[in-house]
Length: 627
Image (cartoon, rainbow, N blue to C red; front, top):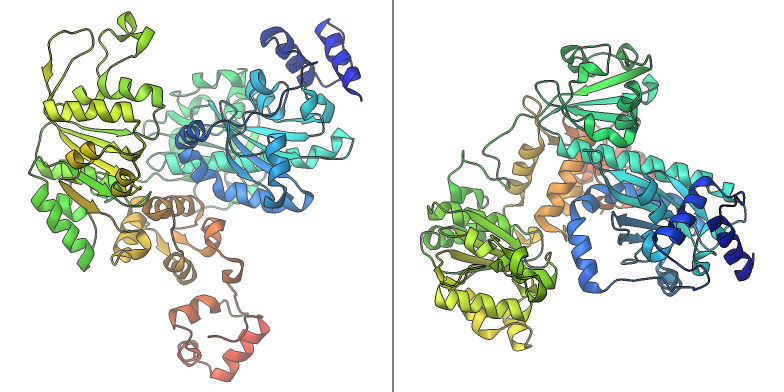
């Protein structure tokens, strides 16, 4: 179809004619014409947002990306050989995660199939991400389905990701630069994307609902424990606190409701939807066979259920604020570096000296700042602000209650900035290296003068708070490069504490034990198989404690009976050569040899066999010669 033919067809649709396209395409074209006033005759280049804007979008989507990453990488491995590109977009249509062949980067960026691309309908016209956001449904926008002629070579398939309250939070899309003419060629792509979305929503629900009963459902008992279709979170009183999108559709259908009204389902008693009371549903654990866990939905649908008992809240788990340990014991385990850091915190916390925390992303800077605040004994609040996550034009407003330019006046009335909220407590400025110069100047004046002019007021108000700042960037080098105010730097660094990267910490076992405790369940603590333990200890952990915490949370949601095996770990942790190699007697030889530091004689002794027999098993499994 030529350019003029494509424009003419869109104009015919705008005049009320049906050209045979799918209804979802026709509705999107009409929105583009009538609501967004787009002109199909004017081709627009793909939009890639600025690095600053992209950083803000990625910061807001950080938790989702961590939970989704394993599923995204598994999907990409399934489709990469067919030249698909994978995009994860937030609810504004901005791509916050991207997987594609690097050799095609220039072509992909030009086509908008790249990190930071914006695919909202008002900006890009009819496209899979934008139409998915508008309809809330999985769909394919194939070649000339696209509104803008720039995008007509593409074939894009997308599915929505919903949070556990039923709100659309992201879109997963796989796209081709070129594809077969028939739209039906993308049916398998749609199935793969929808299946991946279902698993991401389930992982999110499991990670977010450890303190509630979780009910997982499938239409056949064989798939109940391996690929459930829907899941619910239910609190101790039997009321629904969260759900996957599949569960929202299931419950809504049982009451004759539109699934788009799923917010009405939250807070309702679970018995309202099933022919079983809360206690009966809670009893459907793995203590009975899947085929014996049959339940009836109120509309007559038959399902099979799996109940996962809640993890009761703990108040003293390190890496989450608690009371059972002395405050400074939450810093870490034993070892010279951590003992030295703990001693400094104990001495500095009662003072009001400004403290600068340096360390890589994910090393626990905010966690340490909270410990310092708790150990100080002050009664005021701990107020945290991420300077990298707030748009540059809003950071002064957030910090000081100041609305610039034309937005002062009525809009600002009664607004209180974070500086005022920290009165008598601690103001934690995370990623302060990303604070704009204008805000740096204002912060310097407040620290120097000890007062602030409240919004709408004319009399300065005294402020009294402790400042703790943090950055993964070396602020001293930024000062030398002219990227950070020298006078502010010396106001903030009266004391500097550096947190080591996780891979450099001599208390790694302590941290790992605390995280396993955090994500375990009463009476069923989390443990690691030998092979999983070896992989975790040998991973580089570029994301530091945050990456380890997310990995264990993910594995805890997947593992059986509290034992985390290699199969439960996020796939990016497991190199292909580290997959467990099980011999005919069920022994994981990789794990055993790793435990024995590669000593074949010791491994043979533990197995009760001679070295020759063990070497034979190793060769049969294709492991190669042990080092």
